[in-house]
Length: 106
Image (cartoon, rainbow, N blue to C red; front, top):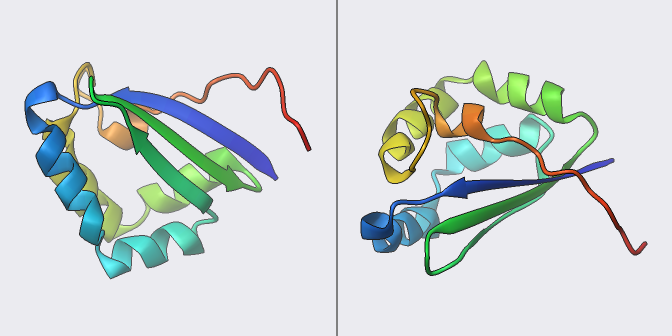
């Protein structure tokens, strides 16, 4: 199982709304993530907008590709794109770049 951690930056002026949106993530989005192999998926948000994502999956590239093929993900990404800084024309899901794991205590 791959452990994946990534960083994104939420716009300071949209932190409250970003938190609210994640209080009620669409059921179909949650189902699609699970079906695509996203397990133990968590998002952590710091007050300055730093967003840390963590998930476990057998194959991150395959999990990303599976989500990219879903209609619900396209709708979610379109709605969420305006919350982030420095996407350079990409969607939030395309801007995720996994960090390199340097230690794990099993």
